[in-house]
Amino acid sequence: MTLPAEQQPTAVVTGASSGIGAATARRLAAAGYRTVLTARRADRVEELAAELNGDGHRAEAHPLDVTDRAAVDAFASRLGPLAPGSVLVNNAGGALGLDPVATADPADWRSMYEVNVLGTLHMTQALLPALTASGEGTVLVLSSTAGHGTYEGGAGYVASKHGAHVLAETLRLELCGQPVRVIEIAPGMVRTEEFSLTRFRGDADKAAKVYEGVAEPLTAEDVADTVVWAVTRPPHVNIDLLVVRPRAQASNTKVHRER
Ligand code: 8X3
Image (tube, rainbow, N blue to C red; front, side, top):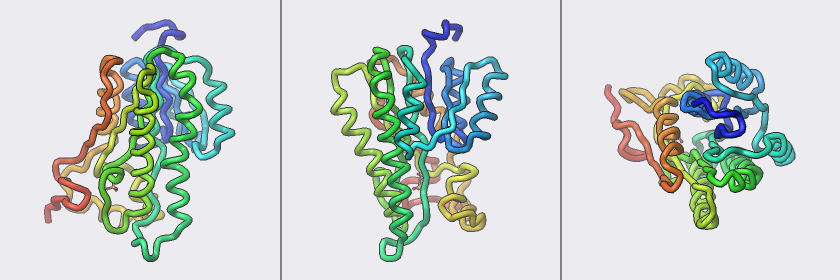
């Protein structure tokens, strides 16, 4: 895409430092978006922005913690007006622990709610005026299949992802009639370098067990592919909800493992 800068749609991607966020940023850049990469880890987003700029794309890195409302608001005001077709990809999030309700740490639940729900709320509230003013905006929420069904040990994460799902579904109702689409993409089992490692606080053996015997879990690129497909539909087409799993996973609790 060789649009003048002011006409080039922007994709703001949160959690762009690794995994699904980084893969999504790469694919959106290749699809012609100016990418604005945010994450807490400045070095990671700066490195990715340099890579994308080196490939001839327009990319900027903005270190940002989506749970910090003042920082999110300051980021939004620096961003300025957005061209039609611009997108906010709410990807930042994660899981902490796999403990039963009886013994889970409330602090983990609070952290997950802060990032997975309030982080998405902060970013969406801060960018919605510019997305609406663009005349053609999209808010995309990367939830999870955990937003649509539960599993043992998952309640804290599942509750937060149900929250993200409800945010997306409610926002779509509230924005009906305005030029902003609300898309939810709910991935199932995705093997990324960090998701399970974070969930198990760096325990690589436990993290690896999640994918043990599963022939082909989804990759970050698989999910990024669905994001790009969903946001590049014509503006009158709203992909409300896209659930994507590996073939080996029929539900949150039914996974085929090869011995
Ligand atoms: C990740 C999917 O199965 O770990 O969002 O909850 S799961």
